[in-house]
Amino acid sequence: MTHVTATVPTAHGGKYARQLCKHWAHKLDVTLDGDTGVVRFPNAVATMTGEAGALRIDLTADSAEMAEQMKGVIERHLDRFAFREAPLAYRWSAGA
Image (cartoon, rainbow, N blue to C red):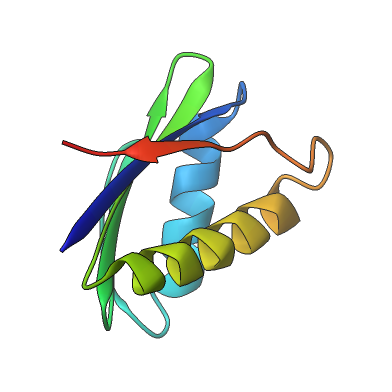
């Protein structure tokens, strides 16, 4: 398993977490509670949390390759929803 995290500076973190969860809920298992959402992809799980001034993304994937692929998927979708401030700055780091 590979775990990575990102802090994405934005004033709309909670809004984007909710939008992404609602978008993916049509095809994936999604849990949404306020400004925190969990999306269960076939080979990865992403937890997105709106924080003051940021969106935090915790991503756990079956492999490093899948983590890289899922980072791209999340970034592309988030940039579409955040088109007014895209491209956002993604600061990914290895998780604990």
